[in-house]
Amino acid sequence: MKELIKKYGHCWTISYFVVYMIWFTWLEKRSMPSCHIMHCFVDDYIPFVDVFIIPYLIWFLYIPDAWLFLFLKDKKEFYKFCLYLYLGMSICLFICTIYPNGQDLRVNLDFGENLWVKMLGFIYNSDSNTNVFPSIHVFNSIAIHLSLMKSKHIPKGHWVTMISLSVMLLICSSTVFLKQHSILDVIAGTALAIVLYQIIYNDIFGKIKSVFAKKKAE
Image (cartoon, rainbow, N blue to C red; front, side, top):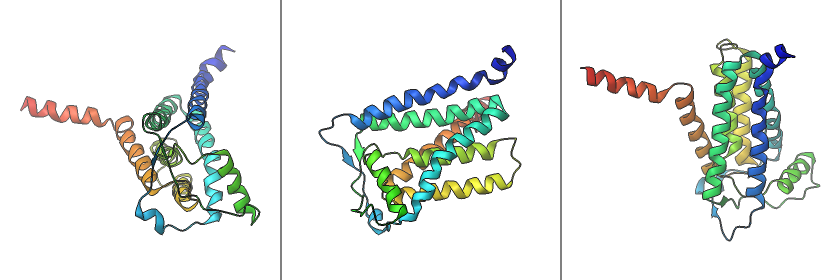
């Protein structure tokens, strides 16, 4: 038992998702007199493509698969990954808490039209068109891909990273082609993923501090 706890004790990190779901559910159900509509002219030129429901739903497998892979491979990498993922998700929810937002992009559909639209109907009915900025779908997808790219357990150029890149791009694209998000949400989710990656994986603050220290020494 002690060996199992020592080997897999970091499973406590999954408890974050309990906190996340409570917070997210509260945001979804809270009464809002008004919210800012995320919409720009680019959204009007993006077509609705129902088949993108496939990569959109793959997101729900992409996250646990990456989580489990890093959980089993390397505790140190796993903790860094969790910090990256959980911090970004919390920032997204915090932004939605202090800056209520939503979108008006959803199209009117006949949910009996085909299988893809039926699946999308389930998403439309279970997920409101609020709390969209930044896109958590986009942030998580990019964060997972970058974390896998950084893993010492996956060789550079390995087929896993190639598949991950394709999945990440398709998921991010699906958010706008299904009219679940504005391009503004995608940009914000991407920016958040890049900034946190620089802070957590590339120690950008440490590098800046080092530069100033060198200048001071000179």
